[in-house]
Structure formats: structure tokens, C-alpha cells
Length: 372
Image: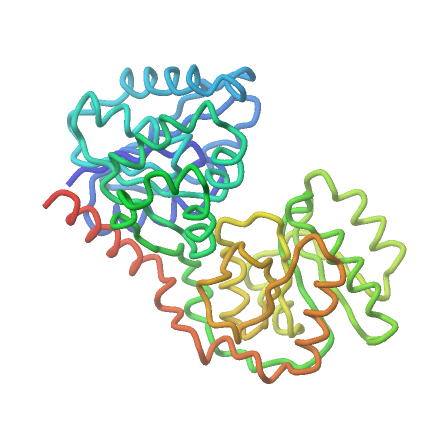
């Protein structure tokens, strides 16, 4: 079996490398084709030691490709066919519906190679809402895909609610597969060891951009100091557009907000051990591995309603909020503080389901189903 992965995000997310490396170890031959703009590329930092995998990098995207979608697809398709022997592959795995899946559909039309396609938050919240010029080819991609994979239940729910998708839903819903991403082996090995903490300390681990909503979370915690004088929010991460504003908040409220910068896993686990809540009320979240990592360390979580892990996990693991409402975030914090023992993460979850080896085996079975 030889798989062609079309993944524009390979250089920017370790999630894909985690899956592909396990597939390689399980004997799957692979070609990883990734494309990007040279101006934003962060390097080949996710390339792994591979016995059966080849990597193809193409810095082909231009500024105008942001608006000229069909021109972008032609550019990607041409570069892919010039650099990869398509006919040597048995199946194509596209890591998103529009940016990667449309290319897989074009290959299917020419080479008749079956493909599976993942649906991500960007597909639902951007393309299906605001890009009508992509809808026709997007629907064709869905109709011709062998399997349609959802990383989280919340994405599936949003996807099937789209008026565009509803026009073909009865023709594609039997292809749906729910397959969450995995977490690092470190967290699997450490799962359930820490006892439940019942204190007023919260932690958030993320980059400081508008989507992660860290400023509203910080203001919610600051507002609760009158009720909980010992409340603290530990901020791990940083960078991006809001770092300056967040650091100003930290400087103005040092008794409540603590900035830690970026941390390695061992250091992060030490911070988790001090806290009772993990909070990341992002506006948009495809999955959010950090929620699962935090749950493995017996923290309750605060996640946005309809995003991330909402719909995937037992409701007892945390609270799901309106990301645009500071009051909703405050209320969720209070509910957990007042009833901490009612939120059971380790007791109601099977963390082996988030083991990348297990997930890779499931994808191999999925490939076999398509090819049988």
C-alpha cells in the first residue's frame, strides 16, 4: 500500500507528522506533498526519520492565491504532477476539504485513484460560509471521496448544518468517519497519575492571537478576584498579535496573572499539577490536543460550545461556554470552583483512544476498506 498525503499544513503542525511517522513505522509507504508560501514557511521542522516515506516541499503559493482559489488549485496540481509519480500510489489522503481535497479530486478524475478527505474548521467556518466560488468543486470533492473524516464531533455538527452541504447530505453521510487526533506518548504514559486538585488556579496553553481569546479569559479571571482573592491564571505560550496587550495585562495584575512563556512537557506538567482548571475558550478550534493533554492530568476544562472537543467528550469533564461572552466564561469558572469534585476527567475517558499508534492502525484499516 502506498499513500499520497496532500497536506499544505505539514510544516506548521506536528499533528500530521505524528500520524505519518506511525504509519511509516507500521509499514505504510508514503509520499508527503506539502506546499506553502516561502514568506511564511517555518522550515522542515516536522520531518521525521523515515524508512518508507518521501517528503516533497514546494514554495509555490503567491499573495494572489488568497483570493484566486482556482488559480491556486491549478498551481498546486501542476507542481504535484511535476514532482510526484501519481500513478505509483494506491490512495490519496487529503488533510482538508478545500485546500487539499480539491487537488485529490482532480487527481481522481485523471488517474482514478481513490481518496479520503478530512474536514477541518477552516473548511466549515471560512470556505462553506464565505467562499461561494469554491462550493461547486467542494461538493464534487465530497461526492467523489471514498471517506470523509472528521477530527471532532463539533466539526461534523457544524458541517452537516451548512445549507450548502444539506443539498447533498443524503448522498455522502454514509461516508462519514469520526477519528480524533492523538496526543504525545508522554501524556499517555502520565495519564491519571496526578490527583484531582481543588484550588483556584487556572492554566491556559496557547499562542496569543485573537482566535484563542486569551484576553477575554484574562479579564474574566481578573473580574473574579473579588470573589476568589487567591485566583490565578497561568499563561503558557505567547507570541503572535496579542502578546504585547497580554503582557501589559500581566504587568497590571501580577497578583492574578502569571506569564510563563513557552514550556517543555515536563515543565508544563509541573504547572498542570498546580491547577484545577485548563481554559482555552477559542472562537474556532478544529480539535485542540491541549484539552486532551490537560484532561490526562486530571484538570477540568473550559472549551467553547460547538468547538474543539465539544460533543466528543462526556459533559462531566468540564464546561462549554460562549466564547464571545466574558460572563459565560466567568460563570463556567465559578461552577467548576464550587463543584470541582463533580468534574471527572480520568475516570470517564479512555486515553488509549488518543494513542497515535492506535489511531494509525485505524487509518490503515480505513485505507484497506477503501481499496477492498
